[in-house]
Image 1 (cartoon, rainbow, N blue to C red):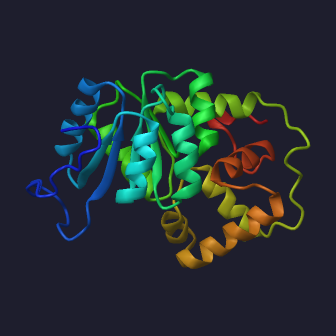
Image 2 (cartoon, one colour):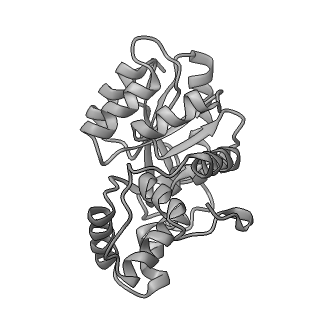
Length: 243
C-alpha cells in the first residue's frame, strides 16, 4: 500500500466484537519508515473495532489525509521529514478538532513528550507497546481520556509535581462544590461519560460544569485542568505526596 493510499474498507468482521453495530474507529497512521508504517497498519488491521483509512510518510501527508478522511485518530510518529509529528499534531488539533492524535514513537524523553502534548496530542505511546495497549489508547482518547503509557503517565505526574506553582494559573475563587468534584475527576482521567455516571448527572451537565470551571480557573484544556488540580491540592498525587 502506498503512503497516501486508502486501505480497503471491506475487511471482514473481527470475531468476538461485542457489538457489530458500533462503528469502527477510523485511524490514519503516520510514519516515515515504510517497514514500520506497514507493520503498524497490519497490526491495527488485526485489532477489533479498528479500520485504517490511510497511511502517511510524513506530517504533511498526515495533515492532508486527516482533511480528506476525517479519521477518529491519527497514530503519529514524531521524527519525520518535511513536517515533523509535533507540527503535524498542532495543525490537526487546530484545523480538525474532531480528530485526536496519539503519538507512537521510539522516544519517551521530555524533549519529545511535552512538545507533543502541548501541540494537542491526547495519547503518547512508545513503539514497544503491544496491540492491546494501542487499542486501549485509541479508545481512551476517543472517549475523552488521555491515552498514555504507564511510563509516560509517571513522567508527566513527576513533571507536574516538580514544576513550581507560579502566577500563570490564578487561584480559583468561586468554584462550586460540584465544579470541584468535576475537575478532580478530570484529573483522575475520567471521560465526560464516566464523570456523569459517577456523579449521577447528564453528560450535558458535565460539559456545562467543565466550561464553567475552565472559565473560572483560566485553563484552556483538560491537560491544564489536570495541572491546576494537582497544583491547588484538589487531588492527591500517587503515594499521597502533597504539592
